[in-house]
Image 1 (tube, one colour):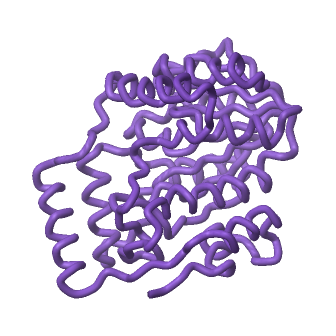
Image 2 (cartoon, rainbow, N blue to C red):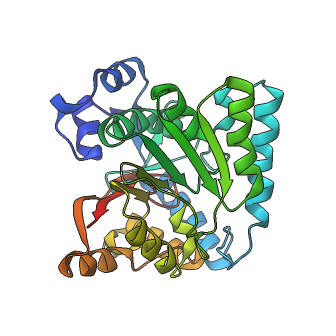
Amino acid sequence: MSKLSIDDFATLFGTETQSLPRQCVSLIEQGDWNYAPLEGEQLDNLLREFLDRIQRKDFSIVVADDKSRWIRGWSENLDDFIASKGDPEALAPKYIRPNAPVRLFRRYVLPQQSRFELNWYRVFQEWLFRTYLADCEMIFEFGCGSGINIAFLAQLYPEKKIVGLDWAEPACEIVNSMRKLRGWNVEGRQFDFFNPDHSLEIPGDSIVFTVGALEQTSTRHGAFIDFLLTKKPKLCVFIEPIYEWYDPANLADYCAIRAHEVRNFWRGFPPRLQQLAQEGRVEIIKQKRSDFGSLVLEGYSQNIWRPI
């Protein structure tokens, strides 16, 4: 049995151990981070089942302009949130599955704790939002989904206006329900990555972020990037899986590549960002592969940049 250390968390986040906020350190010290690397027959069985799923295309697949599954998914979170009278625990996305193997340092491992990935993400939120979202007046999350990030930010920064945007109506209703049930300074509104609403005002002191949302845009993310280049927020923080950063010589990465292709997830963003930087239109602050993720892919890689 192995265990994630505080140094491991810092490595995964791309920071120094001494730079971790004390709240992160406290969560790490309180958590169960034990895991066993999958090896031998156990690993063979996992890979056989995974490759069979790829062959069958047994995944949710990006289909242009089809938001039906997101309406269904976020409706479940909306119903749970209202039934719980505004309990943030009801906002955990259903796609973060308990008792499942995860990716860690480019191999598969089996955590001892059933909510390992969700607990890891809680530490990541604490680090990411305190490190990059503190210095602004307004925060915009595009593709806010279940509302898990909006709820966290509303409590972390009660003085800031937090706007959650999504193309699926239930996601927007979740955010507006937070205002009604909890009195948080939040607003939910619809937004379509493929047809950005240029009437949306983003003050220059605002920060924009996404978490696992742009992955759904396939190769059609250009309109949204152009939208941000026009609006010029203070900072853009993209937390997404990055197809180009997988190593096809690594078996776990190869499986992620195949799954990424089958699901028609986004690609082409890192070279576009590099091109924009060469043209002097953006400044790249940080690019960091996550080396942690679900069974299927690494969803927490960082591209942090700002329009010039």
